[in-house]
Amino acid sequence: MALFEEVSKKSALHPKPAGLLLNYGTSGFRTVAEQLDHVMFRMGLLAVLRSKKTKATIGVMVTASHNPEEDNGIKLVDPMGEMVTPTWEEYAMQVANAEQEALLTVLGDIMKREAIDINQGAAVFIGRDTRPSSESLSQAVLDGILSFAGHAHDYGVLTTPQLHFMVRCENTQSRYGNPTTEGYYQKLSQAFVQLVKHAPNRTDDQKHLLVDGANGVGALKLRDMEPFLQKELQISLFNKGTGGKLNFQCGADYVKVQQGPPLGVEMLVGQRCCSFDGDADRIVYYYSDSEGRFHLLDGDKIATLISTFLKKLVTQAGLDLQIGVVQTAYANGSSTRYLENNMKVTVRCVETGVKHLHHAAQEFDIGVYFEANGHGTVLFSESAVVKIQQLAMDSSTSDEKKSAAQILENTVNVTNQAVGDAISDMLLVEAVLAVQGLSLQQWDAMYVDLPNRQRKVKVADKSVITTTDAERRALSPAGLQDAVDALVKQYPLSRAFVRPSGTEDTIRVYAEADTQENTDSLAHGVCMAVYRLAGGVGEEPQPLC
Image (cartoon, rainbow, N blue to C red; front, side):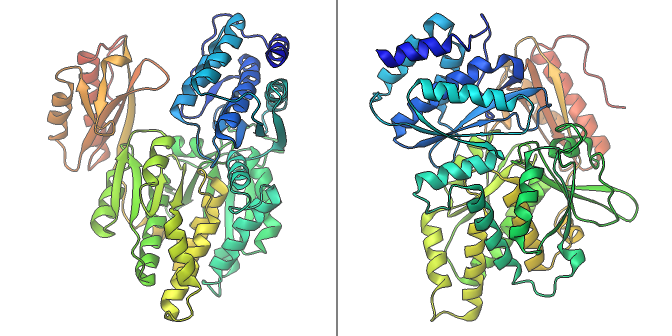
């Protein structure tokens, strides 16, 4: 077949290093950029097959998100802007890891298994972040697409959520929005401007926000978006990519791990600040109090703020819609208790990984999901959107209900439902704070986080630990869960769990309790139980000083 001959010829220009094996995780493929040329070419090929299979446009994003600048990565985006299905994640690994002489056979097997019509057209959207390696690697993707007779639209530099947005717009025939950067800016900005009209008399101080762009693509795109915001949000941008290194001592991940401000951001007392990550799909907020203490408002806090706002609006509108919040085991126990006990909102716990949260959120009329790291969004079912729109246009309804429905309608439009989006989430948080007249301190005071600690224990084989109940309980090895349960009983308001790492032979330990001292003591006890019962290697875990 002539098509396969072209693939074979072009594949030789993107050779795979012999013996190199890579794993397609939640974030796609990620490793040092020098090892990725063949992967990029081959994901171009796979994207063509996925497009033929779905008869829809597929996305390919070249990014390594919050990883160091020397890394890179790639992930595929399915037709509605969601992550690619698990079956195709497996195909991605088969294609990427096939030795050179086996590549055509692997592609042929996928086509046969999926009954793909080779004559079906294929269209792929490509985006990339600002890493030095991203331009040449995205060219390798393009080579793969074109060698397999696919059609490509290369958007160049985009945030990851923007590419997801473009794919969803294209496959809904622009009902979701226009698949251009201007279309993205217009949709989100117009909704934001409409929302803050419900918060009159905002001062310039209330409109002012400090943003750490992680020296990444989010900084560039936020600057492009500013004119669309009509001065309703006044942004002071730091780490904007003009001099600093991507994700180095800045960005959402750095701020969360270090529990302190990023490099170059001078915060005044009580000033609102937020940080994006390198590809702008995560966001965290923070401020400094009058005593100089740093306060982090992470994904748990963001989910609580948004779901509380939505619950009030749904109640005011008199709409029968079920709101659910989806968390992982890493969500702080205080947030779960506040949502369930104070707000009477359904909380669902799922396995770690955005795809699990997104899937569970789809089961609600309105599903809010955020990981503690600041990655998340809100999903509105089609029937919920129709009910909201009908009520917003109903001239016979009361002013209170109509106003609530209009605010909900603009909340739908300011939200990027395809994927977690730092820019969209920032606008939503800013609108919620404005409409409710809340300061950052009042938001922070909704509940107080329990002290928590995360640790790792090195083991010979991480597969000895298996889990259940959304990774909150260990099934094996024998005796480990009993040991954890016995330790948890010793401390007030405590819980702990263990789970195998997705990337290395270590076991991750999480603990929380009423005080930091008790939390650290619990975490150490659990580490010791893992070390003794799950084949710990090297030095015994030591207590934290």
